[in-house]
Image (cartoon, rainbow, N blue to C red; front, side, top):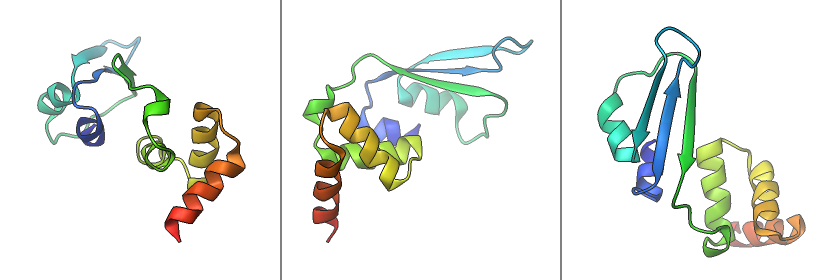
Length: 105
């Protein structure tokens, strides 16, 4: 959540916890709102993070930044992040691979 706060602090998000169970909980707000609610406590149970509204179009984010975000937020390997970024941007995977590896050299 902290990473999302840094990347897009005004994004609307929701945390749904323990759906279909007795102690079901769904909280909505900005990343800062949810960070304030949960604090440093460990969130327990089955959790779903929903990210909505206000996403910048994928074409406004450069490829290197998109790959980095995919790795950090989704936990993808570099290979899978490149593949996903290429798909989202409508680019050949080989072009994204070359671009990423040319900036890392």
